[in-house]
Image 1 (cartoon, rainbow, N blue to C red):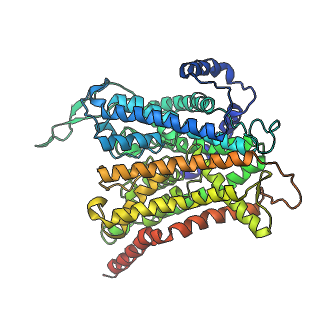
Image 2 (cartoon, rainbow, N blue to C red):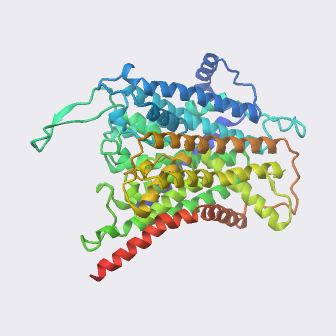
Image 3 (tube, rainbow, N blue to C red):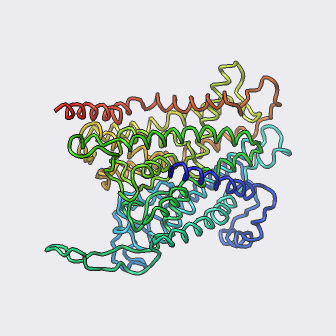
Length: 576
């Protein structure tokens, strides 16, 4: 019941938020202009940019990449020299060069993959200023690109004036990004931060207090309790599909997630904006059917994965067969939360690019482990803010192409033909995940000195595969127990993070720019209908088949093989 309630509340809240976002990013005036326009104009003057100047896809993409480069350099330097910067009452040292690079790129790419323990290795400046700032700005950047892509598939803002083949205005990157931060992310984060503080999540810049332990022992007499502006960071880490956390164990830590209410708030927050983007997209393209198609496909896959994960974690852990009373798999979970909401969180956090956890994914039963990594591989069920819906559009374009071939027509999307150039780039996006993830996984498991995994056999392979999948999907969760704070892991993950972030955003922007310049073909009786159950089934099939064929061998060497091994062990133990 709690799982259904949380899912329903998230969907109901996403509906009005999506309509609000449609107004924010539309060309016409909006009631929020009166509140935010003066502040936005001041920021544009400070940055020295012309917010009203339109950009084609190339200018938009270059602005996106350059702004990321500048932010990345600043982030790296702060993390490297945090020990000599202010707001360091606990005397924390700077990060090593490779860990600082990985951490900077991880948060820059909206991944928040952590090879460090937040409360122990980052200062208040690094956590409360740098990390939180990136958690606001990086999802806003991807949302801006998504908005530009949606404008492109309709021909751009100058579609009525530009001729065929002329460059199209996809909006202004800086204006879209600033609006996403000020008008969407900041107000939402303020509300959620206050709600979490009311549940006991810390919000303080005081030094960590040291208190005596309740049970005095010979070696341990006192304990340091980490504090900080935790509620503000947790609010945006969830809303921005950022993940990570103030504390190393993320939201399984009772300070970061103290009550059932805080758990429900955080669970809804991590999927709220990605759901709202679906409603926003339908509003921006002025097609209600597109919203219904997107919701039906994403909703079906989301509920299917949730059901499988919840069922999996309600089953006993095979490792305890014959040793304890058979119940749900409570290994790696908080007793106060239980199996169902832990499985829901694990599914939502990997369907989006969030990656935060309230239970340890390394301890999930094999089926739930398969569900979490499948959500990341698809990377288009809700997905990260902006980038998730862009990935979904890639699947839609691919399904349109395949369906067009099946009925013998040139594929068309919103009246514009998908031709050789667009399909070639779609092919790049199709093979990119398997090429990157499988290559780095194979190299790493070949050399045990590089691997650093804590489990032998098939589960050890899953640990490595999951880490690179998480990096490519800009997710950030992990099968913990992996010794990943090494130069090999930090540097290879940096490469995967960059490839998994920028190519899947820039290439669809290119495709949208290409489509925008084409002449719109009138709808006829022979036009492929997109907004009906037949195409929805086709789209679901394409999503599942593409990922199944690409990663079937890794599934067999991972969770499928592990499940078979555990079943055999359980049968042997049960027979003794």
